[in-house]
Length: 197
Image (cartoon, rainbow, N blue to C red; front, top):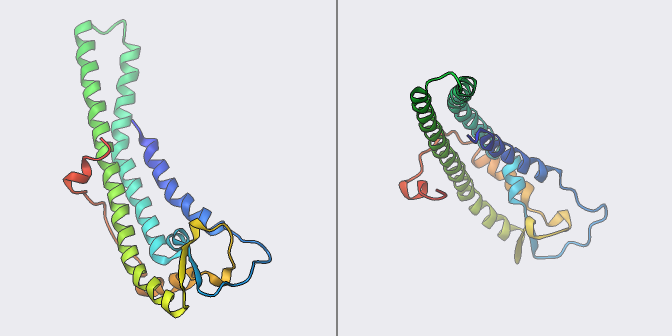
């Protein structure tokens, strides 16, 4: 079983936010280039109140899924240990029957885990889309207000003068417009569920 995959999924959400928050530029940045603006989407997701609410909500959902899958893992480990311990003493027919039941239980657990992983991924994607829908008009407004002729994604720029960064203002406006999202685990449409199998 891949219970550790779910833990890694949660850590990925946390790690991206911390890396974005730790980025620092040079002590003496170059000149401000008129008409050039920079936006850091990862930092917006990590530092905005809605981004934090999504991270916390996904952590809660991941914990729920791990709690749901844990009994499968424990039952499987217990039965594996019992079969290994009784390998020479359990009658062959009973051993084969228990081994077959164990294989079925493992498959059920793997299928459930795969479904839950798809649900978590779909849920996160839907929350990010809601944030993107709220951020788009904010970025358009900032682009016009700051007289940007070129808006660059921070991920594509190595260094820049912080005065050209519109991220802080985008975060401030997003915090005001969309302070948080409340959500539960979502079931992806059938065509999305089929991906990755």
